Image (tube, rainbow, N blue to C red):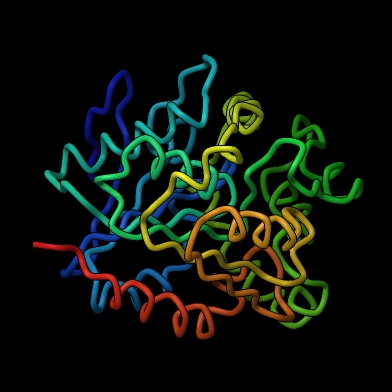
Length: 271
């Protein structure tokens, strides 16, 4: 994966496929390696899929300084700048969905469509995760093996049923996720950045065609948050996938694709 200079950091990115550009923005503490390779491959059949490591993750720079959602949104815009892409479909999940909201607000002319996955607008209008989920999220990482940190987080992304039936699949992803692990300090910087999210009151300003999608069993960012966001954006489509949690885009990849691809294709980028 090559790197490009965006502002004060070098960001690692990858491009797969041909067609209209789709910028995919990953969530808290995760590099682009977190994207399901099969999902990326399927999307790349008809789209030019751009993935990148947010600052603090993967092979991108990891400055030990305050981060913010606005900063991440401008990083994402900088990736498009360096690739000479004036306008793209934007898809963000979890914290990446927070970044995508801010991207659409800060860079409306560059947002062809907006897809917000398993995310929240934050603030007093949001529905927080249950205490047991928050405890896992903020649990200390020092003294815990990187493999066990990942295993400890499985219940935040997947339903108990999925974990029981697909443990071999989950175990097989660990080496890929740990090739370029996120240092604890960088994870903390990203977590603190989520506290800077301030989009709720501005969501009605978003005019791009918007799809809001999540898993009904999400215990990290409850599905009610997607309902709240969809209500705030005029014309937004809401799709809640039953039986899956935060990692809906991999655990229910087929259903997600059936909703996402037609949505993008029905809103082509004007030439």
